[in-house]
Image (cartoon, rainbow, N blue to C red; front, side, top):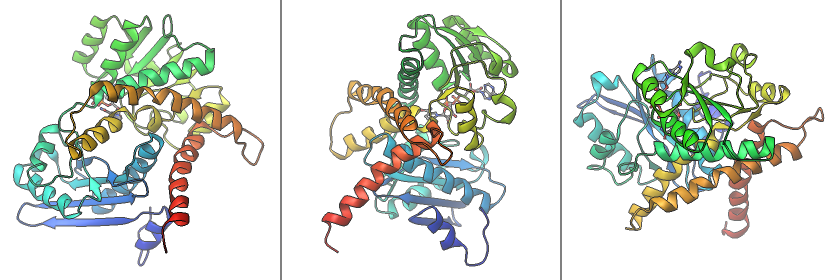
Length: 366
Ligand code: NAD
């Protein structure tokens, strides 16, 4: 993203960003940016990341990219929320304190509900509870979203198996899980409970021990890509499917929780050409977003949060993925080839947003 003279609005227009808000408070040292990408479906929902960015442009670039991704994720998940994201510039270990967080809470409150925040990298559930003393526009303070994300990934893997092998049963299926943190460890539990063979990797020895105790096998981090398996499940970092790793994959399906698994868009086409089915990350890992969205809606309506209902919602991720796969078969590109599941996911999400925009144009008075 190039930022030049008079280029700010041009840059916003290019990807249809609605609003960028900068906030500084010299008393608390807060420097924060909130980006609201799109509110067609409802108020923008997305976590607040606290990160020691190298410079302000880097922070702006990151928050814009993340906010836009939230629009697609919420739309595809069938939620009535738009996409937004917040960043606090600073080192969470060194710079985070109650004064700074409360200052950020007042900033979020001043946006009047156009942006609703939650935890993200560098912020915690405890931080969200502090924000609550200053703003009503915060969620994800009661339920840990990770088990719901893991359940959504599990349902997604079953949908992928059904699509590829005609049977969604995980019994006897071999899954290689990269990263057994909050989401990966819950996924491993579900897979092993249901009869799958699981190979894991991680860089944290405690996490590895826990997974082995559950019945998983272990390989070194560098070897996970070449494990002969049915499903490779990235649950650690972004960018793991790239030019150097894609050639090493020995699986039929890539389906995991990590955000931004593909280093770039062309990796979606590369996976298709290798005959590997890719479950687009923002569709399969939406369980956590569905959870925080439901928590917010329940709090607004003074209703009790019902975990069973959330699990029912999250289970729909499987059907949603199958719709995306069907779409990728139906639409062909200019060279007559079916489009990748990555492109199909974007079309799936945009159709919902465009549908509502169209309705508004027809029914709302000018
Ligand atoms: P986490 O930090 O609890 O777990 C990540 C695990 O990956 C850790 O155990 C870490 O040691 C391991 N890891 C780091 N580098 C590694 C490497 N090079 N090789 C192997 N393992 C490595 O995070 P999480 O909450 O479980 O989230 C995992 C991924 O899923 C992240 O990309 C996150 O953005 C995404 N995600 C999480 C949620 C959620 O509800 N927690 C929701 C949507 C997406």
